[in-house]
Image (cartoon, rainbow, N blue to C red; front, top):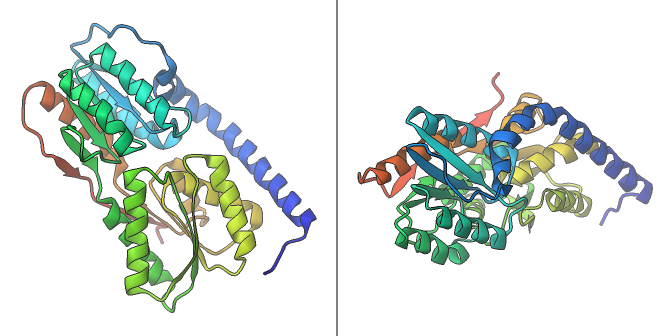
Length: 324
């Protein structure tokens, strides 16, 4: 096994730290608006709802820029029909915090709640509690199919994982070696995506999966995982990040280490889009997240008005690559 000199590892980590600081400073001006109007509203102790015609709530699995476009669109859609939005999210993917946020929102008695559950099994009793209290609930991104939720908005995650596998096989036509980073091991969407990817690789390719790690919702751990995997398997041919945190971490590591291997990721946000344009990410598979905000509001509004809704609103997949 090849090992890098200690001074090389220290230098590389300093480079990564510098990139994190630079990117963070550059993002401040873009994120401040959203942190005021969007996800950071999670931490307000709201005890009464506004006097709008209706109020809906959204609970994310964690506070992250990935959800900014969804929040902005949902706010605009709600405002256009006379409603307001409460947005909450744990600072990191913490099941207990998400449960407490859902319980708190139930006490506010909004007209509907949309949630992306971190752990579908753990959240099911609390989703049922909301529904039993007369509050319609829809899941998005990740489902809780055993709960009383009204509908699921998002893509088929197993199909999306297979699509990433198919895309990788076209790049590594004669086989190769791949490193894989996934998200939260108990999140249904992440489980399904990983299973879809692994099944496709094993059944249809000669590609060797060298290692799979889960960052459990921590950006710091995702970066550390990737660094360790690269140290342990320096001759890998591609990296696959099965969620947006893994994808963003690969940008930092690839920049700091000067890597030119294939990098595939999941989800679309400005930093991923920029990395594709700069050639740092080979491609991304999106579930058309830009439509989720609108679908959340329209679905909850239909439920509020007593109208029927589709149980599964499939937003499909798109492959995002650099335009030639």
